[in-house]
Length: 149
Image (cartoon, rainbow, N blue to C red; front, side, top):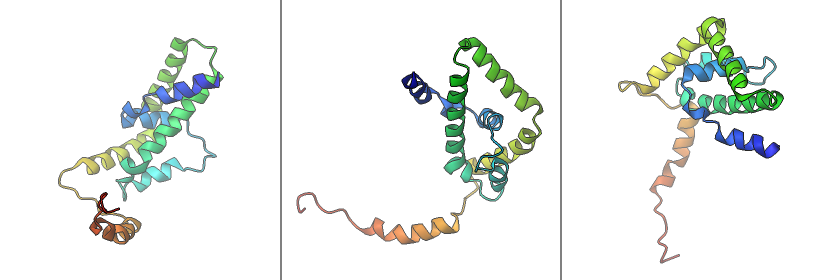
């Protein structure tokens, strides 16, 4: 049985979801006691839009994938059609009437627009600038010849 859930987890195409569906699912499964404060993270996108593609999306995909598998485990006796209908109804309810979704989605859309704009250049964060400065000399080092090694 556990192999079945591992296989399901590996095959869920969460990466194909649009951000609006992914956010709805992420909000649907949000745990108020979780270490990650989703609202704060999304509000930071105003200042750091690159986080959406650099880390947040992957985190949300992992979170949603795990939550879906756990829910499937809990309702494994339900028919697939019933399980899917339940998820779809709840996602649609989040998108239609959840005030958090309504407040956070415009921030995500704006961050996505900034990230995809051709006339926008994102400056690296201070820590990234430091790491780049540290590692830049590595690019000047030529790899050793395999024949001389």
